[in-house]
Image (tube, rainbow, N blue to C red; front, side, top):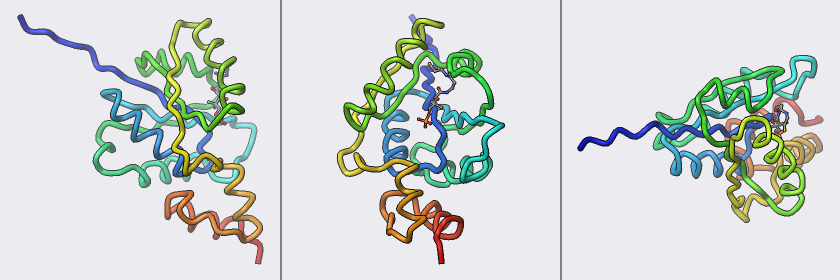
Length: 168
Ligand code: PNS
């Protein structure tokens, strides 16, 4: 008997303003667990971020290793509930990285709310210890005042942070 199994698709959501090496780690690991990964860049059109949505998408696409890029696609969504994004792209699961207890406290109510709304499950991956202190907001603050964030963000982001944020 031939068994036909459905594609298992996950959504990795976030602001990605900008993507960090912590994000890259989670995306690569999500791609190892699921057939397809949709990186959902969720943004509020009323708020201007540090980088435009197009820039964020470009940074993500060029930061993914070739080994996973065929199974990972990056899409932007504005003013939408994450559960609606999951339904529209046909994803059965949300994957998020957790850096520690503070992340868990922030993420748990959202995971429970999303499950309440549509039944979509959230899978948490423990963040890589070497990136536990890395967040988009912190790397921007450090870069703004001339600190070195090399190795904590992809090279393309490192260059863009220096160009966009560094004070002379
Ligand atoms: O990278 P971030 O900013 O921590 O990502 C948070 C994000 C965008 C994943 C979260 O705010 C979200 O899911 N926003 C979409 C709107 C929504 O569904 N809100 C209700 C969550 S229960």
